[in-house]
Length: 214
Image 1: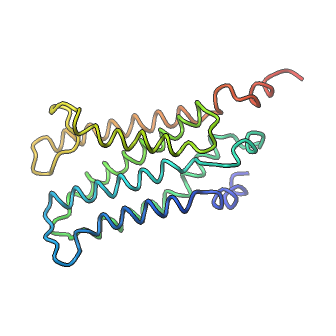
Image 2: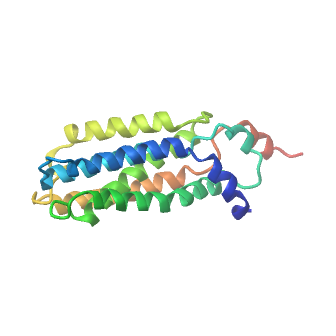
Image 3: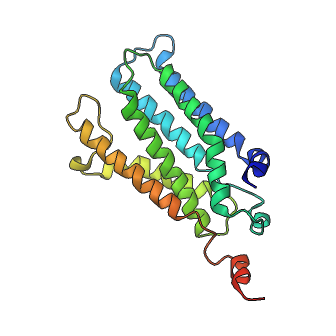
């Protein structure tokens, strides 16, 4: 059943939104290569974080499905359909992130593993926000509230987090390693929330009638 769904799901993915977000991310990462630019490690890290945020905002729209009401009766559950969407996009997202990293001059590129952890966590948080929105609403387009939540969190976190919980540090900062321990915990939490929200929407009329004896 899942292989048979691959092509239809591929066609319904929000490629325009994903493509626009991906292009914005690559343009952001590529700013360090503009003629006359004088990149440094701090600027390169900021540009890559901006690119990661752009990619995460695009992924927040991954579960948008105008035909959502028409898919509640298909045999394949929502968890499998959501996992299929993520699986189809994951290789494209990985190639996109590799391109973003390569756009930053190697002499100024931050540690790839650490900044990739940050990017992966941002994307996982966006997907978790989308799955929560699907789980708790009937909106066929949960991307906008999910993206808004991610953007607001990204803007406020550097301002509101106390220094001992800092996430957005630089490689030269002694808190760099501890910060990425926290990024790893955030990633684990986002994955846990996302997986736990993969069930059918709460209170969906179809689910109630399907549970009733016939």
